[in-house]
Image 1 (cartoon, rainbow, N blue to C red):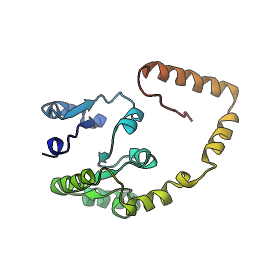
Image 2: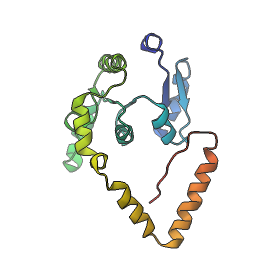
Image 3: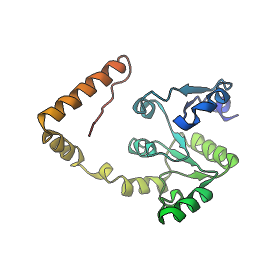
Length: 182
């Protein structure tokens, strides 16, 4: 098994729709279930890669240059339904920022390749990240965000600060995180 071979521990954050299956995952000793109520941000810091069916969280991992693997065994069916509905769909095969597995065997092959490469992101996906996550190469992104925050009305700033203090209390003892509330 890859977990033993590469000394890997898996953090598993179940989607709220999957919580009813939580007991199925508790039998694995190398899997730590992360409560759904827990914040995502600490996971980006302590995780070396993300495996997901599809979530925008891949972009947070992409911003910190960590590998992303999509596991999409039902992608063809899903996209066919989306195309019928509104005619548009994000194609992870041509637009995703990591490799795509459509079977468990392919997932484990991609995962092992990633582990063997010591979590190095393939150049193909590094290029996609640079074009899709434009602010990675934008030295003025932080300045514009700061200027937008400064322009917020005082009342809104007070609400943001109160939420920030509330979140800070929850993460005492953890690595500090930065939050922006819009």
